[in-house]
Image (cartoon, rainbow, N blue to C red; front, side, top):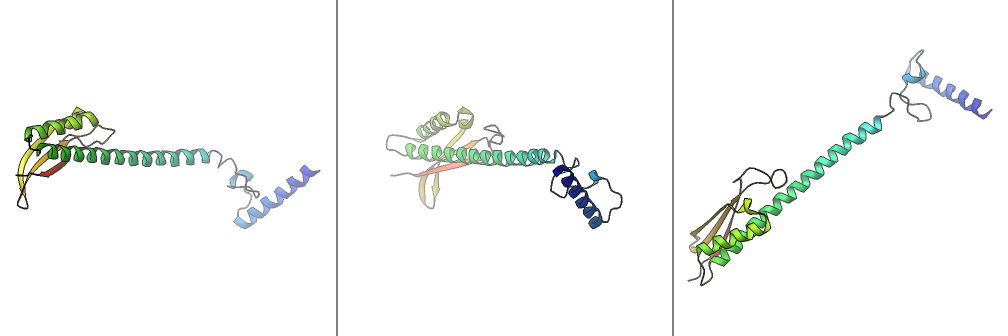
Length: 162
């Protein structure tokens, strides 16, 4: 008896939906949702599609943030190695060749030899002060640590003491 009452109630609500939408003679499956909120066969599986689309977008955004963090890590590591090499090169018993060797050693031990292939050392005047400048040109990591070479350039300075 209870089942019969529920079927009658559904039929009444379906008639009410038809009357409200102005559709005459529409079948039960033509409506997007039953009166009780249950989806019809036209909506079946749409949650899976929504999940895949939103999930893929979320993964792409997450990987982009991770890649940006990696680029900043590589840049900061190269900058620190260049500055450390410049400070090492201005010590009393050291020179520009020692600064280049120290910078290459630091970069190779932290990031790998690919990033330490282009290290240049110059003595320059910065605002009237003689400085030792260590410039590193390295690949810009676009996918993981892979990327086009020479796009990332950092320079470390240290004042030469006389």
